[in-house]
Image (cartoon, rainbow, N blue to C red; front, side):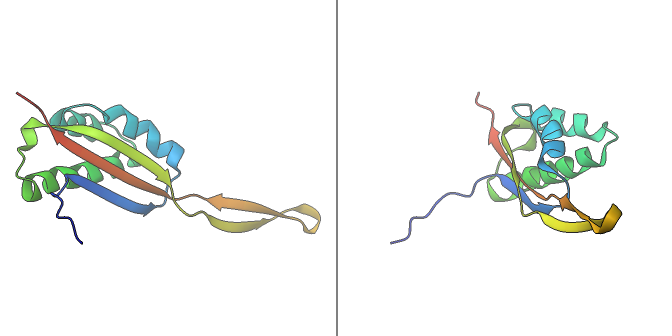
Length: 118
């Protein structure tokens, strides 16, 4: 039995090559804010990390408009989730024949929008 669900205004970026702790700094800044205000704040931040979050937020806004018939001006950021993805493990040669592990972390970003009431 299949249950038909309504489309949700979300956007997802997976396997982003930046650590989750760096992404969470910018993701938590926009949580709970209006869509236009969140986009404006992220546009004026010089960090490349903010540009990644802004790109996913813009995609969520486009999904809300296209798939869920929402108006961008009446939406807000309901939830932002940054999870850890798989870690790439590399080795760096060190003194006396030893090696040090380098962990290159990846992230998954999920942004969910909702419509303002009233």
